[in-house]
Image (cartoon, rainbow, N blue to C red; front, side):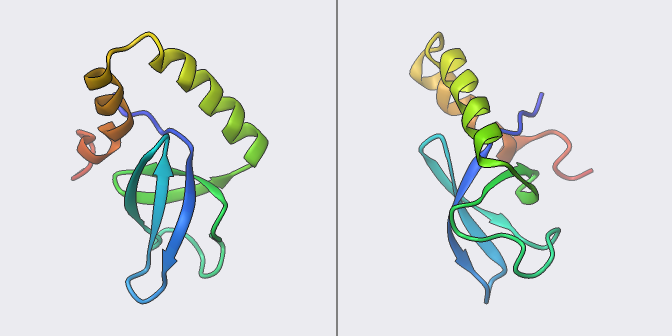
Length: 96
């Protein structure tokens, strides 16, 4: 199962067309190819799938989702937490 956890855009590299996002403390790059030019800004909350930003979401909705995810993560051990947050990078549909 792939979860789309809200991620905050912390950096944008227009030359490479990627954004660095923070997903609950895990930073990684995500492609901007599926978004219109200039649509994603630093500080925006976005949803990722297979390494690409798919859409932006409202900050209040993102923060509420992150609160629920945090409650779930509290019940997991450290290895399970990291796996859940990083799972998008290994999504079985990645090459579909």
